[in-house]
Length: 460
Image 1 (cartoon, rainbow, N blue to C red):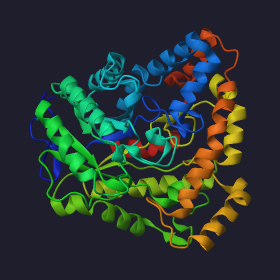
Image 2: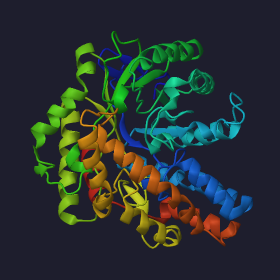
Image 3: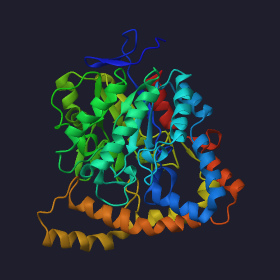
């Protein structure tokens, strides 16, 4: 393998020898940035960590996360990805691994060491990594996956937060500038600048800062409004990939049919392709590479529905093949909603948190994979009130109904559940806490074989 960094060449990504390299693989969600539907906690990672530290005590807390950080992705996982045939792993991370809010700009070595290990494990097997800042200080979007406990993205209104991201990326670029198996830097996951006025100048500033340290690695730019809006870009910069996310509604809505009706609209392959073409219009117009940074359905355990969303996934992969698009399927490992591998239902961890999971499901507190069915009696009158009193109210990014859902389900109801989740760990000592975290080790997990089959047919 040519040991020069990947780069872009017109609408392709190429290796050091100039050969086209389509990046195809997974996102490593839930590891260096924990998400509620992936690891089972309510609300945000920071809220949950504070509660777990209080309940477990320092020794058991550290034992749990030491095992979690090493076991969630280890040699067996890298071997498994190589067996599937993927050549890329997108590695999301939270700034908390590198910096404490009480000590801004003072970077912590342990965060870099965690990234180093996964970059090495993947690189030894010919798998590239894309480094992805998934949760920035101040929160770059309005949702839980940027560790946002509210519905305001303060990153865009505080220069201090932006300065810290520039500082972090300068350090990351310095760390990995000579690492050819790092495919590039995904500078900010799913940004959501409500004004639309800050993101363009900030990206320009960040690009200059990173290029001054590392002129060679590819920069991956997510569009605004959760990687769907590219209107802030004019002419593409050199050696850059503009990144769209392509979640298809039948894969994330329940109930759904594919092909068939979902939320009053008919979906088939042609409709899915039109959505892909709309989301990638900027890349195709500017002749730059297409990379779908996130996509993928949710699985419910219903054989009919899961079979249909696998057909949807296969259609998406077929469309990506036709257009030469690279892709990163969300997500590699979780507790059963999306991962190609997941913690076993009878694992110590899932048995331990079962009461909290039941209540989360009943109250619909997870935005991703959750349902508002059981609390419509709460939401209906609020939505009716807003329709009557504020008929023109259309808040960024998805309108009033989603805005209400975020505040009621994912903040108001989720936040008090954090303490109940932590109480599930009451009494666990350091040994037991480590055993709970070991539920995420590859040998303890279950493989989603129908998904494996779809992927291997495309990757081999």
